[in-house]
Length: 161
Image (cartoon, rainbow, N blue to C red; front, top):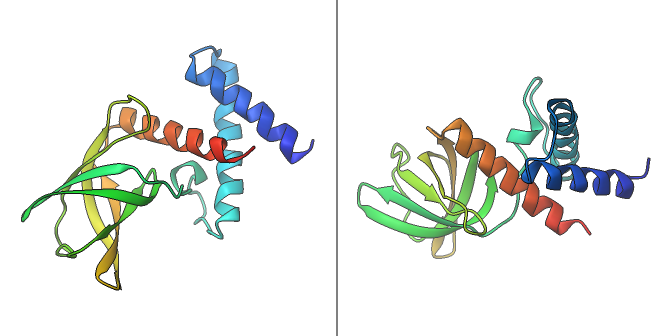
C-alpha cells in the first residue's frame, strides 16, 4: 500500500474516532495505526525511541499554542514553539530557576478545554535576548493526556496533504 493511501485511511479512521463512531475492535486497530503513524513522525524528526517507549507519547509538533505558566515570581503567558504529549518548549525573556516546577495551562486548538498540569525545566538555551526553555510535564490527567495526543494527531494530519 502506498504511503499516501495509508495516510488517507488513517485520516478517515481518526475522523471516525473523533466522532465516536468505532467499535472496540476498530479502536484497537486505530491505536495500532496511531502508533505506526507516530513512529513515522519520530523517524522523520530524527528521534530515536528507547526500547518499549511509545512513539505516540514522544513525537513533537512545531506549533504555537498559548500556555500560561504560574512561576513563583508571578504568572507568565507564552506561545509554545513545539509540543509533545510529554512536554513543550517556549521562549522566555528571563529563564526560570531550574528547580522550579510551575503549574501550566495549555490551550488546545478550537474551543477545547485546556490541558493543565505541572511543568519541569529539562533544558535551557540562551538566545539573543531570550531563552529557549523546554519543559517536561507531569500531573496531567489521563483524560487530558488523551485529549492532547488527539489534538497533536489532528495538527499532524492537517500538515499532510
